[in-house]
Length: 388
Ligand code: NAD
Ligand code: MG
Image 1 (cartoon, rainbow, N blue to C red):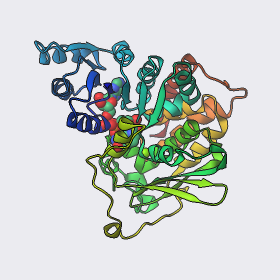
Image 2 (image 1 turned 60 degrees about the vertical axis):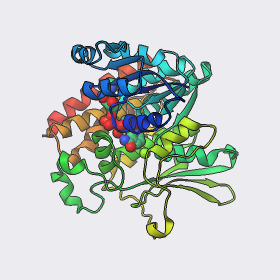
Image 3 (image 1 turned 90 degrees about the vertical axis):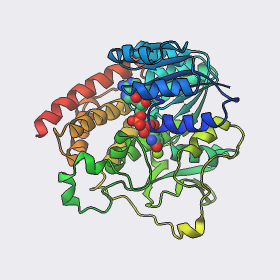
Image 4 (image 1 turned 180 degrees about the vertical axis):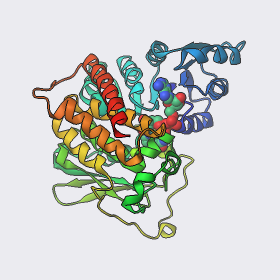
């Protein structure tokens, strides 16, 4: 099986190589991409005997080329090279770049008809209908890798979609679940970068603390599974052992459980349509002891309310929401704005670019999405300045 990994140097990328390295005879590695961590990119390219290694940044190319000199591994750099890497013929492509930067490479992988293992939720949030339409047009398959969405996908196998009444995604509640609300204003990027249950990249970890991550996931679920906004819900479940639940017309609520290890969802996508043993610890129910569930407090997690509005609005709202969130997160990381100011920044951008405008775009093209993304980032940057 020919595989490529976009974002190989990140948390999901590394979990993917863990699985691939276990079965070297089964996989032929076509392309690997990374960012500034070229040492790790080069190391993985050698370890997995990849044909091509690409860094997203032009200024990192010289170092990558020198690290891989004499290995016969081709190197390249820049946005166009990422897209080209994703379009190299492969059977399975892992989309694990963080942010909207993953959209174009993901689309390129779909256009070549590959199975796209989709960790990059931003792809579905920014351009869900376009992505599904591209997959259909090129006979490509999308397999969700976000743990909740992999769980839903697994729960829906063999089920009739028309009997599905609701989909429930669980959320850990993030780093500040038990903090007094007042204290959130003072939360630092370091404090927001620890997660109670999952070990993930810094950006998604902070998004978990603000629940922007769950907000993105509600939208992702609506797009992936063709649901109505009122059919997707989020519930706090501190143990993160139930990943998602699917409700049916007869009242049955089916749950997917497992230990919190992303190699389960990645491995499921790698072995699909079969199931194969994975190096993941089985869940010990007795040791787990209990499962708790609670409603998310809208005052603590305003991102969830914004996600509802975005799902109702459709069109370019997802692209604007995601881009404004990415820019607000940059501003928080740069200590320009506080933790609790990210949601107001995103709300302002949505108001200006989506809610206060009449007649949005119904089926956005890639250009529409990229344009909305740029506009939203720029406006979010301006809003962040006024928040200080
Ligand atoms: P990460 O920060 O650990 O890794 C991100 C990867 O993307 C790195 O390889 C980095 O070099 C690359 N990258 C960053 N900016 C880039 C750019 N502008 N252009 C090209 N490449 C760039 O992130 P992660 O935690 O592995 O998450 C990756 C994606 O998977 C995100 O969309 C995230 O929401 C999703 N996801 C992650 C987890 C998890 O457990 N980590 C779970 C579910 C979903
Ligand atoms: Mg998730």
